[in-house]
Each structure stands twice: as structure tokens, then as C-alpha cells.
Length: 213
Ligand code: E4P
Image (tube, rainbow, N blue to C red):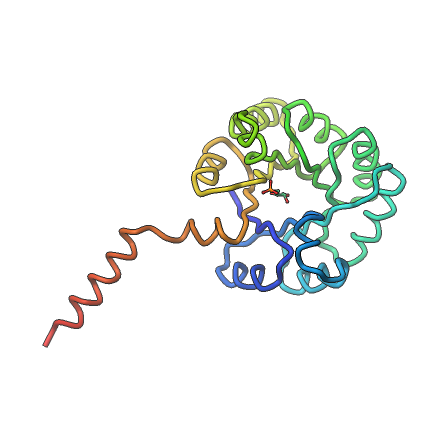
């Protein structure tokens, strides 16, 4: 399983990228709104930092508008992936964008059927939202497992991005259940690095080292 970072914050992206583990970036309108910047300018900045896929979401609700916005976003950098919501209009837009060889990420996936439809429309990625399903008392990870099994059984190449990841257990379970990618908030990424026994071990090694004559 690969890691993407789920943010529009350029400092967080730079810091994560320095670790050498970031294969891409996902943004959404809520994350961009927090930054108070020009979306296109921020995408250019991100594209200078990151070689992998950068998901940029369309705002239009009709297929024609989504395709128009998608083409504009894709023109910003060759590694822009156009993020499209899971709707009938979204599926039409995915079909058209993929015919133009523009990569797409179908977002707000909450059922295996939605993921299958998105894949058949030509999506490069599907993004099941784990945390938001857990929030309403459903099992987000079960959805990832179902999608992974269906895609595997039917030789579907669309990649699964485990999204709405809230904590490290989501990350391990997403990897075990067949997600190709987990997109992580910066906070969760940092949580993955730390373990109390690692920290205690470093402290003990240093104190033993400093005791020598
Ligand atoms: C992924 O592409 C989304 O931007 C994101 O993971 C949504 O997460 P949230 O449910 O924490 O807002």
C-alpha cells in the first residue's frame, strides 16, 4: 500500500515529502477553503514538490461543467488527477475525461456498487471514505475489503484510495484489506512514526552511551 497526503497545506506537503514516503496528494474543497489561497496557484506549488498524483476536485455539478473544469485543472500540471463526485453526472464526466487520457479519482464512495460503477466508467482511482462511514455506525473497513475483493475477482485495474482516514488502526487495516493507497492527514502520518517503546529505547541508548568513561 502506498501513501498519499490528504491536505492542501504546502508546509505539510513539503514536510511529508521530505520523508520520501509520499506517492501523491489529495485535496478537497473543504481542505482548500481552509488555506485561503488561489486553488490553481496552490496546485502549481504542490506540483513543483510532488511527482505523484495530485487530486484536485471539481465544483461543477453537471457533466459538462465538470469536464470543462477538469480540463482546466489537468492543464496545470501533467500529474493532476481530476477528482469527481460519485453522481450520475460525475460518471458521465469520468467517461469523457478518461477518453481524453485525463486521470480521475471518484470521491465520496460509500458502497461497493458505487465503486464498481466508477471503475466501469473509467476511473483511475476510487475513494471510499472510511471515517465518515464509521461516524454513522457503519463499518468503513468492510467497504474497502468488499471493493478490493470485487476489483480483484473481476481484474479491475482502478486503484482503491482509503480516504477519510482518522487514526493509525485505519492505516494498518486498509493495508490488510487490500487498499492500494491510503491518503493520510498530516497528523495521522506523524502518529504512524511514533511508538512509546521506540522513544524509550532511544532515551536508554543515549543515557547508556553518555555513562561510558
Ligand atoms: C479524500 O480524498 C478526502 O479528501 C478526505 O479523506 C476526507 O476526509 P474527512 O472525512 O476527514 O473530511
